[in-house]
Image 1 (cartoon, one colour):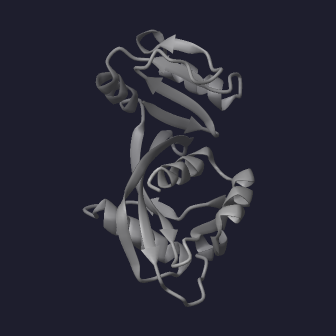
Image 2: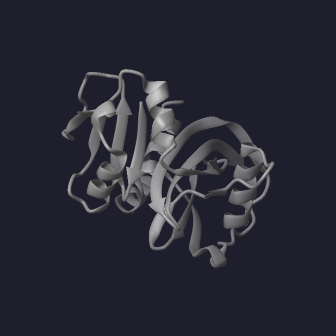
Length: 199
């Protein structure tokens, strides 16, 4: 299954017949991708299920409709198992950013977290999940973000990367994370859920 968000509304491409939400279901081979995106961008529908009989090929066809932009980021734990959050554009988020040419996903994830949060001593524990969202910037783009579980015992004051629109960088405990989720993106909740499944 693949879940792609536009304005926080999902396109779910799945080979499963089991319906797990109230979104309409269409056969992947019968839909026009541009029409779906138009409906989701304009809030005509709240989400959509696309049933695929060949998930791998249909997913590759779906990707051909966009310029794919690779990004990487981290869910970072401190010694208290609190999670590192950034506050950007008035929304709680996890640190992430674009992968540069010839840069590995792991190096990009560490670099972006360091730059956006002013943190060091980062260690990658494992890969978590890949999330996808569509946005418009000089044409339709699909951002493919590779997320890593990380740890850091850096005790110095964190500094938000203000030129990236980040105004706060804080570690949050579980209660504070749930409060932040009242003002975050669906993709970020997916990253957190993938982390919870490890425990």
